[in-house]
Image (cartoon, rainbow, N blue to C red; front, top):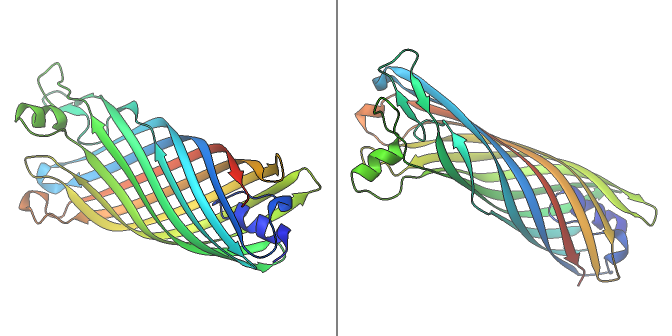
Length: 289
């Protein structure tokens, strides 16, 4: 496989960013580490007919993240593993369950809760250089968002789930959102003289999603289909014969549509819809082995 084709393949998949001059003939191994600043915009609509009302809420949070990856490439093929783990950050949230809502007044008084948020992502992908700098790839990903709200009570005495769980002597209240499944995509890259390489990519994910919490009084558990779309642009260049750098801008959107799976009659015919939009800017270093 020509160096420029492999370079564009790895760039476009958003899995690693290897410039043309760094790749040797035969096998190539490229570990990397990057620092990413993600913004997570989270929206949820929750319908529970037994409650007699629909609920909705959102949050937006910036998540500093460490990204690690490793690529093994040979001829026109490559295999990549990538892991991202955020540091815990907090934001005000009125996502159902995190906020306290006083329905005794009209309109209902919603008191947002300061909520700790983390996000982890794991992916493994197999790619192939189909033609010139056009590349295709398939893989598997697993992503998880966790919300941990502070206990909150409204002026009228209404409490959120975290407060109710604390009052009952239970464990720390948490909500977990997970999507897992396959994805496929394509990319195209351009070598800019001796300066470096730029690539654009797109990928679609078809997954199963789960939303659950650990509320002591009838915990939620929803399952259903989740769809994802990723668009990215990446620049990389060498710093030396064995070291290079990369900058990656990427937008990922996940839409989950789930129904209640607890079997609890209180939640009969209830459903949930969530959307997570993650916009991330990553800068990092890679080594060519």
